[in-house]
Image (cartoon, rainbow, N blue to C red; front, side):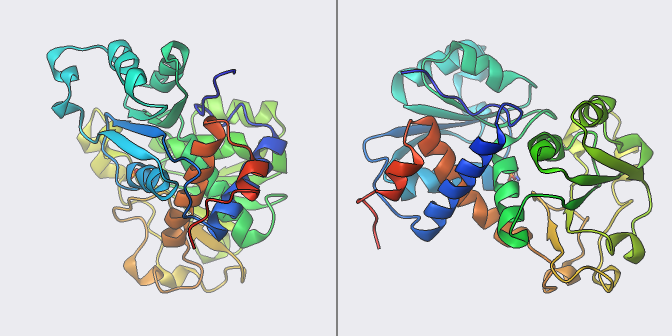
Length: 315
Ligand code: CP
C-alpha cells in the first residue's frame, strides 16, 4: 500500500479538504472509539507545543491507539548528536505513524522521504502547519456554513506565522478575499503574495485595524508575533504590540463574524474579548481534536466510509 503522509496543505484538492471536513464532523459526533486499537502513534516535538501535541495525543487516546514520544528534544539522543534521519528511522521501528514538530523548514518533508511510516507535520519552522490549517478550515466551515467567498482578515505576524501561510494555500479553492494587516517588518512574504497572484486569490494589504475595517470581515484571524523567530529582540519589542484586538472595536462587526487565533496568545486579543459572541478561539482549539482524529485515520488508511460504518464507538 502506498504510504500516505500529511506534510503540506498545498497538495490537498478541494475534494480532499471537504472529505476531511466530513470526517472531522463524524468524529465530532462520536469522538470516542476503538478504531485505532493496536496502533502506536509517536509524537516527536523538537519545539514547544501545548495544543498540537496534546490534541494529537488526545485524538490517538480517544481512538484507542497508544502514544509514545517526547515533548522536549533535550531529553533525547539528539543532544548526543543523533541526526534527524537516525531518529526518524529508529522511531519508525516502534510506531505506525510519526507526528513531528521541528524548527527547520522542510524537516517533515525530509522525514516523509526517508520514513517507512506516515509522517504528519505538526509545524516546521515558519513554513507550514497543515493540521492547524485543517482545524482552522473546520472552524470556518462550522461557523460560516461554507468555505466559499469569505472575507478573511489575517492580522499580526504574517511573516513568520506558519498558520496563515497554510491557510492561504488551502483557501485557494474557495474564492476568498484576504486582507493582510501587519506592521511593515512582519508583512506577508513576497512568495505568498506571488502564490496568491498565481492562483487568482484576491488580497488587499493595509495597516489600519479599527472598527470600520473590522466591519467587512467574516473571519478575523489574529496571530502572535513569533518572538522565537527574531534574531534581533529589539525589533521584536518594536512590533510586538502593534495590533491588539479589544472588545470596543467589535461594535460594527457582522453578526456571524468569528475571531480565530491558533494560540497561544500573548497580548494580541484583550481578555475582555473572551466573553464576546464573536470570540471563537477556544472552540477552535477544541475542533483540533476532531480534525486530528481525521488526520490520524486518513494517514493510517482508514476511509470516511469506514469511520461512518465504525462499530467501535464508545458512547
Ligand atoms: N496552535 C498551536 O500550534 O499551538 P501549540 O504551539 O501550543 O501547539
